[in-house]
Length: 65
Image 1 (cartoon, rainbow, N blue to C red):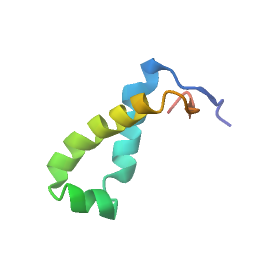
Image 2: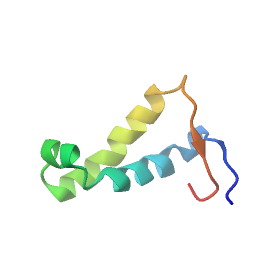
Image 3: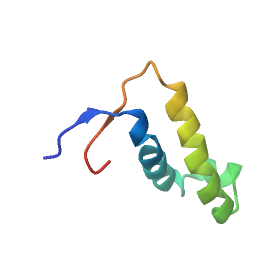
Image 4: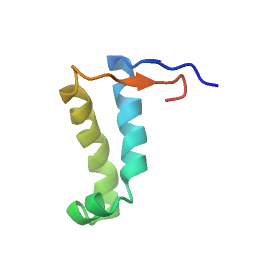
């Protein structure tokens, strides 16, 4: 079992990367960004922005993200 802990600003890039990979083949993101290479480049940026915008929310992670 992994230990869950609050995410910090140091986790931002890793979490954004995990979410970008998880949503890469999502139908909505595939429609918005049809080129897979561009989508792979843009989604981490989008999820990093969303991470920053959710400062009041609860962000949790594990040691291996």
